[in-house]
Length: 352
Ligand SMILES: [Zn+2]
Image (cartoon, rainbow, N blue to C red; front, side):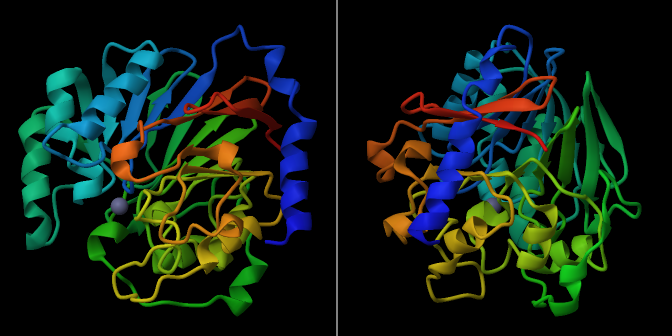
């Protein structure tokens, strides 16, 4: 991205900077992107107080990610998790669950089913050890009750919604779509969800990959245009972030849930060369107003391949970082403020 267009991205955020403060007293729809260093743990809190956690990060000897999730839950004033969604059975999405369940009550669990490859079976077993008696397989097209926030399940177990939602329609970008072969089968089974609060929408598709994104976006973009998009595959955009998909959903704000050496700027299975194109692709999104990152990419630390430092929650290697979150607080009128938990830096936006 050129310096000129980067300046316009920054300016777009600054222009609206005072918008969110007027209604800051009323309950907000809050989204915390917990830093799990290249995986996912996204905590969503309805204005009605209900909570939903999408994924639990990694399991480590020191229970790093479970502790970080609990810290975010505490920040949000929660004493339990109402819904846990496990998008798919990979270590970076379900690894932290057993430790987390020891730290905070989890009421209900939602998943794509318990089918997977043999290589992932240990993660199904780990999931069932916590969720066996309170789990439900959820299908695309279903909804989850969440106070004033609508949750549409977009994808689950390799199947996508059949009808369009959120004003979706024909996608002219499909004519020149670059197609790629399917990568990891388990990624393709990811549960994906669209959260809607008034004009504001948030799309989280887990690790849904390129081929599945094309299926979701062609010939019809089934999810319409969204306000905030969490990068699939943690921003490893050689097998996710297909331009045909990304430029059709036209997110105003993108949150990259990458680690210092995973996701953005890194490789995906089947790819060997580190790409420098990932950030650039996000920055070229039509109408983009802000890009936030969980980490500076140390695989590709070039400043023009990362967002502004104030909008990066963690800057160094694992041991140096505090595991800071990024939070979006959304008001009923569609204005929202994104905050960096490391330095308190924030920007306000207005959902189109
Ligand atoms: Zn992942």
